[in-house]
Amino acid sequence: MNPEHISPFGRKLLDRRNFLRHSAGALGSLGLSSLLAEENPTNFSGKAPIRPDFHPDRPYSPRSSHFDTPAKRVLIIFCPGAVSHVDTWDHKPDLYKYHGQKPPGIPAVTFQGPTGNIAQPFWDFKPRGQSGKMISDLVPHLAEHADEFCFLHSLHTQTSAHPQGENFLNTGFTMEGFPSAGAWMTYALGSQANDLPAFVAINDPRGLARSGKNNFGSAFLPASFQGTDFNAKNPPANLHRPAQYTDAHDRATINLLQKLNAQHLERFPHDNDLAARIASYELAGQMQMSVPDIMDLQGESASTHKLYGTDTGTPLKKEYAKNCILARRLLEKGVRVVQLFNGSDPSGGNGITNWDSHSNIKDTHAMQAEIMDQPTAALIQDLKQRGMLDDTLVVWATEFGRMPFLQGNGTGRDHNPDSFTCFLAGAGVKKGYSYGTSDRFGFKAEEKPTSVYDFNATILHLMGLDHERLTYYHNGLERRLTNVHGHIIKDVLA
Image (cartoon, rainbow, N blue to C red; front, side):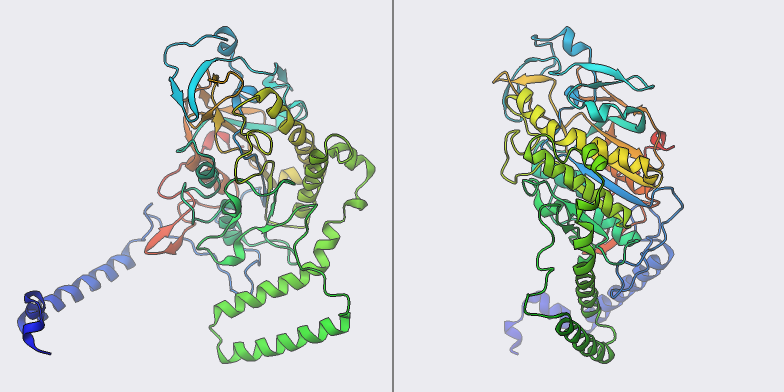
């Protein structure tokens, strides 16, 4: 190469003295970073990561938690669209006092435009159970179980947009491309079911939620740990073999594949991708037998169907009730994580397909509650009757709350990221307990403000996992569900 074609900086690098100086510095830096990596963990928290001990050809084998806890499985009931906390769980007497007024401090504009006046709850609140917890008549069946629930009234989030809100609650990030909480838990713990997926996402009868499969995806974790998506109405696709195929044909094909796969693995013993694909296909084969059985709800007693309400109410309520029975059956069979959705529609819905009630909240919230209330309460009651609530963690959640004042249209409540309520129940959780408070209007988290990071850190802790040590190395960072944030809410632990 003609030296004239080389830049001055390039000629400096070709100089022997400069080359040796730069090389020595670079090699020294590499050596130092290697030594530091050995002495100090790379995790932001200063703790060494705990890597789950699993093999690609056995991704769902059960694994030990980081420490012993009562919870062995988790049920996540997620209500997309933002349930109004001030009309359900968070009783605010001042809403009655200032009804129809606009006190100082109320913003002029919120997410969808101009604000209206303070509005009292659209349903009456009453004391429930021995705890006397004030819960509204919108959810009378769930209210009967108030003494089982641990309410978190001071939650707040980073966004007032639904897709980002769903992402944040379920993955710990407002952006796409991060694993869901269910994927993290199955990555860490595997499953107790050997013929069913470790993580099942039971979507609403109306379809996927706003953020779609992000809510139960695995992102950069191994694909084995994404949620398998089916519900009582729509079983997993392609489970049944063609009619012209006999059992003998099926068995011969499987035997041939096993032989070819074994030969390939012998030649390439470290081909983890192939091992993972084989495990996936083997699970699919087992599901051909297990899924039709688990989805056959006809064997459930008449009293069970009556409890859940599969034969009463609207068609959507009946389908959601069947989804709730399916959730219990999956948990019984040892599925580690079941995520049950109540609400759908990637394009919105304005309270018709989810809880997003920007107008006519009295009608639209009532419609959603009619679908959700009885079946969800029955599911929790059924788990308790069967003794499963002792080792099942129940999480009821929504992405954010709604405002204590009406929108300019006078009939709906806008998004409220600064205060909302979720609740926990079951294994390891205090019963009949309320943690934190919002202000007198339910507008902002006030006492013991609690982030979504704290919420997810606590869920992982209840499942026996250290949220600071459950990490996955990706693109140069030790990624985790709680990013670099989060504290366990110790007051809610039993």
